[in-house]
Every structure is written in C-alpha cells, then in structure tokens.
Length: 290
Ligand code: 0GY
Image (cartoon, rainbow, N blue to C red; front, side):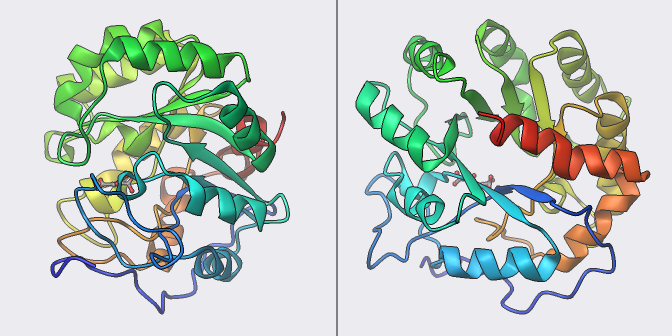
C-alpha cells in the first residue's frame, strides 16, 4: 500500500435509511488480496487489500442485496480479482471489466459466463494512459454484440472533447460519478448543464449519481452535492444508478463512512418510487436481465 493511501473505514456506521428490498450497490471495487491477485505493473497507485469477503459483509451490513464490481485501474486489464469475486457471489454480483483492446472473443465469452456485463473506459489521466479512441470504438462494437454496455470515467473538463466519442458508441453508456461536476459552480453552471443536455438528448446514456465524497467541497454529509444528484434523479429516473464506491480508492481528504453515504440517498431520491428505480429496477434491468 502507498504510504499516503487511506484504507477503507473498517467500522462504518449503521445507516438509518433502509434501502428498498433487493437494492444493488452498483459501483464498488475489489482489490487483491495482492498475494493472490497482484496489482498491475503499470498502476498509478497501490491500495490496501479490499477482498470480496469484506465487500460482501459490507453489502449485508448496509442493507443491500447485490453488487456491481467495477474494475479499477490498480488492477489494469487483469480482471482476475473481480472475476473471482463474481464466481463466488452466488449470482449476486455482476462485473464491469477493463480489457486489452485486442481481447479475444473466447475471453469475453468466459467473462460473460462469470457475470461481466460491461467494459470500463477510463479517461482520467492521473489514473491511466488512455488507449486510442479508434481502438476503444472497436472494443465497444465487439461487446455490443454480447449485450454489454460501456462505463465511462472522465473529468468534467474533458466532457466537450469526449462528447462526439460518447455519442458514437453503439451501446448503453454509463457515466461514473455524475461526470465529476464542479459543485462550487452550482447546477446552473454551463459545464453541468451541457452534461445534463447530453444525457437528455441521448436516451442510451445513464448516470451513476454516486461519488459525492469525491466531488464535495464541504465534506460529510456532502450536502453541497445533493442538488446535482437530485436533479439527475428527477430528470432521468429510469437511467440512474447508485453505488458506495467502496473501498474508495485514492480518497486524499478523508475516508468516507459508508453508513453516511447510504443515509444521503433519501436526500436526492426523495420518494419510494425514485428509490425503487435507483436502487433496484434500473440496476436489475441493466445487469441481471441478460
Ligand atoms: C473510482 C475512482 C477512482 C479510481 C478508480 O480505476 C480507478 O482506479 O476508479 C478515482 O481515483 O477517482 O471510481 O473509484
């Protein structure tokens, strides 16, 4: 583990909010254990181990039923830790992989059998060296044939330059962390509004309304982020997802309490119907219908 890396909170608070029955934590990661699943040679950070057993226990403690495990950059294109977790999940976890652009058909099929339903394209320069867009387009075309979608992670400053690429994708496109808005500028800011317009005009684009601990300036309980997540949930009720982001890689300012994160959900998904769509119906449709 890097000297300045903050491990996850081993003792989160029990949330007061009770998630809708069957709720899905639709953005979380597993790391290692490094002894069995070494971190990638090209990684930009070395986290603590965060194995499936811990994630499963957290799922139960927080009142969730299922997980979507997203491959993080510290494991590069070596998806074994994530796949191992899926294989041991009793069909209660699905995965989003990171693949080499020349990944074989056989490897994709095997991943599908384990529960992978998407591929992540990470454009955050502090985390990865981004492959050429034409290679990513070719990957998208191939995974579209499997019924998978693309998860995209980018900084708000890169939205304009990436928009034509996002629009060209032949799959559903799921945006990580609300497109990382600058919350100090308010929801009327031109940058956030162009993101909202993009989602509005492209019915295949979905949004994860988590990541508040990353974009908040105030810190816990992250109330400065609520206007952003609330707007997205209200505008796009059937295309939003939420996840803990456990074990919160690279959090420099503080380590979030997962119970506090869960307790923020009813602030932006304010009705039972909105919570049911966000936590159950949308992720089940995207991850468990094929
Ligand atoms: C996240 C966010 C981060 C890291 C990664 O792939 C990753 O390493 O996703 C981050 O540092 O913002 O999605 O958990």
